[in-house]
Image (cartoon, rainbow, N blue to C red; front, side, top):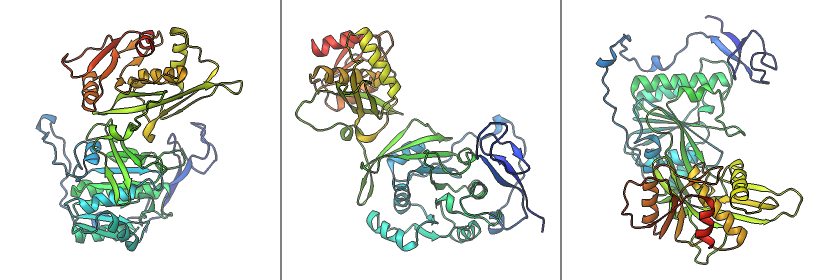
Length: 453
């Protein structure tokens, strides 16, 4: 048997070294050099479990290649389908990451129990009895879901050859171990090699594979960065465990857009799809309160109405505080400077706190005008009419700039019962017969006059 050869590589820049050292001399990063296997003895893998008729690849003219798209597998979950771009593509690898306890395993088990395809759910973290207890709460009766508690890939592939599943779910990739690598589960080499074997299996059998991945304390998926390059789709499951709402985003998607968003509500019976997220992101308070404004934003193709809350108070200490939740703090500082320079509001000696309700993070510049309205409302302690929403960007000169897909934002505001929407004077509308009053303004000072007289 050939001897296994190893070398040391920097996980940041890829430089190779003959021995371990603390700092990479190429990129100057510390503790990024790990040992990797560069030659290993031949052992049984996926090929030995499933004899396949392989045809040698040959060059083809691009015009002769069929452009017909594969039929996607419907997961039975509209939110997941939207984020994936219409469903699971045959032979694709989907990597789902998120914080511990956020609901990754619950979501995938829920999909495996309800999807009308034969699904093999491989768990390396929980026993079959633990999964059964969770399944009783989610969807107790399922004929197509099979549970396997195993961590060695060679054993997993043997069961796959016998069962022939339509979909494979791995929970989690960090717990798998292959005989090809002489290292512990969760190491850089093991994660990369196990993923390579699963990619080979997925592409050769045209079976979609979903991998659940752990994340580090920095919020990145644990393991080598090449793991995210190897898979076809990277999904991030976000949310605060103190809130009941969860957000599913696509950070990478070879088969669809990365701008789509899925929203779930965590319940005792599992994750419920939120069909109309605007209703849960806007508080149902009859009494008008100062410092709140509604913004019309977009997440991918989905319009959302979100509530912006602001609190402006006199600074107790010498340096005023600027704190945001779900919004960029530097952009808030810019907006406050514009208000002081262009609208005459003296906010330099006041504390300003900003919050986007619902626990979500928004980077759409279209909410700038709602931020201005909320800050000014709190500063003068005058309530903004609950029937008004905002959709515009603020420039450094104090001008109100137009935003994209304004007609879609107006339609969503009309559907939710708002009486008027404030937009930029330069915005170009596709139609003029909206069933909602459209207010056009050119400068921040125009907004002040419109709201507060």
